[in-house]
Image (cartoon, rainbow, N blue to C red):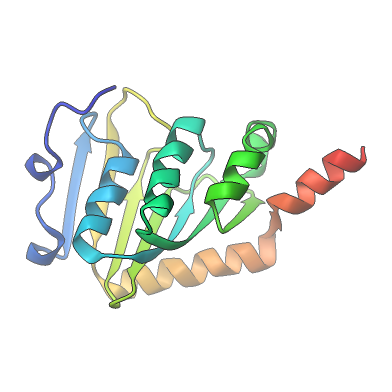
Length: 172
């Protein structure tokens, strides 16, 4: 689906509000990530999702190629392992760390090198679809910090690095 509406018609600049939301099929989470990075500058990114698509990875590729992200960390669901493994080579070129866990959350955290913190909670997987998706965007540092702590705990205590799973598949 090609975006037909300017993102500025859906969301206000981050500097003008600390909390905003939308239910729409007119933007994708990749559009929102690019829009956030335009406002806050080079950032470290954490994303959780059930699954990821090749099309979304292409968008992340250009974000990293343009040096808009210093690192991208990804947590996907174990149930999407086969699809994820089919994208492994591309993922390794684009994503700094990738982990698999029992995960259905869809959270995007962006922390700029200047210290800006943006948290996006969405219903959208890291895929492209033609469905209405929900988005809540906040620049509240407390919300960001809580989600980051929880994502780091999920990674440390309940996940497996994608490279470990690939190694097991190759040994079989």
